[in-house]
Amino acid sequence: MVLVWYSMFLAKMCPFKIKQWTKLPCAPEGTMSAAYLLLLLPPLVSAQTFHWGPCPTPKVQPNFNLQQYLGRWYEIEKLPASFERGKCIEANYAIRKDGTIRVLNSQFYKDKVRVAEGTAVVQDLGEPARLGVSFSYFTPYSPYWVLTTDYTSLSVVYSCTDILRLFRVEYAWILGRSRFLPPETVRYAKNLLTSEGIDLFRMKATDQTGCKDN
Image (cartoon, rainbow, N blue to C red; front, side, top):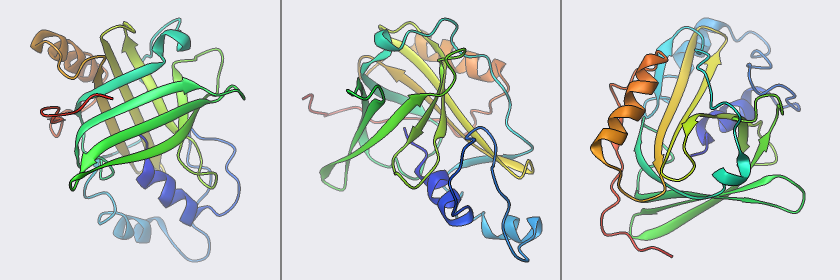
């Protein structure tokens, strides 16, 4: 559950250090215009979900408890993400000695288990459910917002980045502590996302069959 595409895009468009992760921190240099940017992006976002206009600001989990959230979460359903094309997708969160959060994502793709390690941080102690995640030292933190969780069975995560406030790229995940959730729990999660104005037309279930638990 990491926004690899956006991180790669910003690394190319903004070669300097980025201090704000909630807004696009720079515009293309030189003669590149917004119109040119629109022509450039469609091939990159063909496997993502994007809409016109800036990102919404959904409510997040109040009094978020990071310690209770740590551990393994399985992906139940998601909006399309080009970096998640396999099955048996899961994420494992743990606190490092330096206080950052280790993010270990894994999926079974093309006959092998593929693992990616990243870092998550709480960037605003006033709203700890709005985290940032990065999988490279050279890219900014991408939004990872926990909209709701009971810590023991369900988590609903949303991420959105707007490009020059012209359009936005969205991700959403329904996660579970087990590989399968009851249908009524999945409906609850989808209703929550819909109530926040998030379009779920392209949301699909993740294949969690035949998976091996570590």
